[in-house]
Length: 487
Image (cartoon, rainbow, N blue to C red; front, top):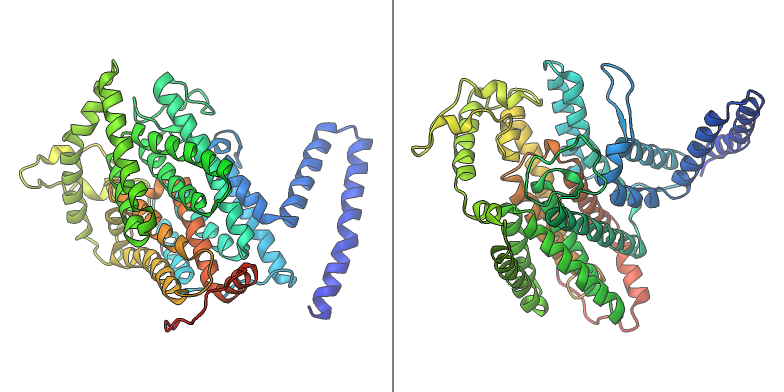
């Protein structure tokens, strides 16, 4: 740390407490107790944030599905609101940058993934200059993509030790368990805890939890199922393993109750992927989804009032509608194939009205009335053209490719989290397959959760030697031999 940085820290060190003390004195003398309480709470939060930004990030992971309903501060017309997620993520981001400036934290070098994220965000922001609903579209861009990208950066630079990864996995198990419980309770009792009055689910008779959307709910719980199962593989104590088994069963059931066919298929294929790479878990990863799916279908078909489940499982209308939407989206993208029609809530709707087409005999009327194409990559193609779509795909590609290189690099070495790369591929499969039938522009938490995990993986890649050293130090009997795989 140089002398200039030391001097600044010393000055801030005595000026900040003095300013706070003077402010408190003024508030007490003027009897503004409510304001004083808010200030003290704010000071406490930022002190905690500065001391342990990772802990605040993990708190976000658990509370975000609930708190975004209740903590929202309007700043007036034309200015994006401050929500719980935006406040926490931006706050942690600011603290991490300040710690880096004052040489209190080392940041990993920027990877091609982050460069692609910056280019994608800049392109989308530029197109907002030509859109009609700038404020609404800016909020969608912030929540749907920029906040998840920031979470990627934070996870990469905050999660740098084995204990940090374990804390993330345990927090994910807690979040997944309570979300599964809330969704299951809602399905059977129609009581949706934590959701305020006035917010109604867009998918009736399906488990949606606090997300009000069954697709996002099924995808989120599927991701937590996979990360929790990986945590289960690391546990050796019978009590913890038993608790995790019950959590996994509850999560699998809640995915079934979401009645989202994409989530069903994605989770099943993800389990198959894990079984292929880790034969030790072949039986459980294949038999568990089959058992739950079969048992759940039998139970639901035997219960009264389950016609909605039967209709959802075999209904062809949504499939026909999606095909018409896809054909319309592709036809629309041809109008501006390079740069698209601009990022926006109604960008697809406005651009596609003159491009409605039939597909394999399906009426074009099935593509009417929907604002989005229900396909993330097609939506990107329409909004940001081939350039934006390439940047977006490259973000996924480079991250997954890097995890595979790390998997090869650590072959034959004592690396505790080598198998986590396989689970990350499975999680990526769940996200990508769900993106083929959904639009992540509305899925802040789902997208944020994925990029939080992806950032953790990239942090392992950036600090691979550090993690290998930690594993070697902790292992009583290091593996002998060396790998021929080069980085």
